Length: 493
Image (cartoon, one colour):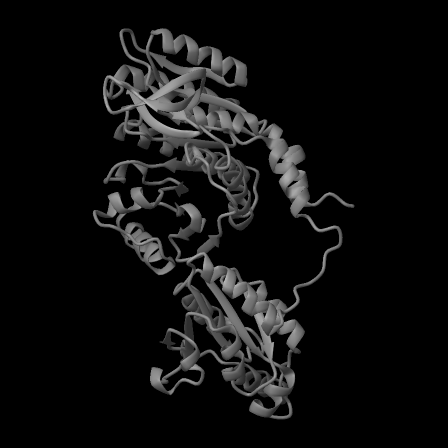
């Protein structure tokens, strides 16, 4: 089989990428044991220690993820001159990470987090740290290192901010300006309620809590709420994209230009989310640095996150794991999309609803797919986690629109609809209305376009609620056909 672009990226591009990681560096230490009794000294569990491990954490975990993807990684941040710093250097050496950007401060505690686990569950975490910002001379030392890295060739930069003092306002802006000047993509894992220092970044990647903290209010983990929150932040700050990690609901990217990309979560079983955000940052930025599209980069990042959350503790993604997963996903023989039967669609809807997801349904002919259709479907999809489209069959369209319609046959219309990121599944129905189809599917929300009233919509008795979305003026298949006919008549086509 001919090697496709994802195979080429995973096999040949990743090992050649040069990526710098700058931020708050940590050591993560884990104490594993068993809990079989309560202490006689106090009402606390006794953890009988079995073994201990130490791994790279914080910005260093991002670097570890990149190194295990076989990228060339250059790490910068602040450490002390203590025993944990010695351990950190050994961990970096073992991971083949270039630590030449480390700023060493005397009598400073290297940030270390110790997690106590019993029966694979985290019981308590102990933090050893000093939060002090970089001094001016330390910032200058780090920027001199970055200039040398850029001169030698960099493909991407990740800023990993844990509010421990490394990414001061001045340093963050100096890094982003240098990256913009050199045409290097920058991804930021943010913290705090003021993100001004990240202005100019290509991607800012908050989780739901960080998104809420920045806005100063709680944001519901729902499609419309997340997009609306991101749009508010785009008005306030200057980022090219906000990439919101939404736990079990996957990742949503919202561009400053209003474009939205969604990618659902892939993990089947979650043991520990420690470091999952670092994995997403590393996998996504490496894909962007390798010139993959945002959509493909999201798929790679989500797949990587789906792997690491099934592990216990801070676990970096490995390139061979992504290769294996891609090979499992990749079909032996490719086939174009085929619309589901109403029974197949109903079964899938039941599965989604059992997980607590909201399923949205809308229907139409969608003959000659155009901007009006796409915007309408995108708005419908934001009302829930899944959008199912009922598609009028060729015979049905002919009855509704006339003998000359449809211009595009039903199988092709289904393929075009399925290619839209906002559409999960398509079901073709023979009737003139979706009433009988809705009785079988029973989604949560029925969306209708136009000036209807909710209590007049056919099929409303089969859903929890009806939503009316206005069509965008100036776009219709009939209008397109009339325009084409007029051009033909005038001999211009």
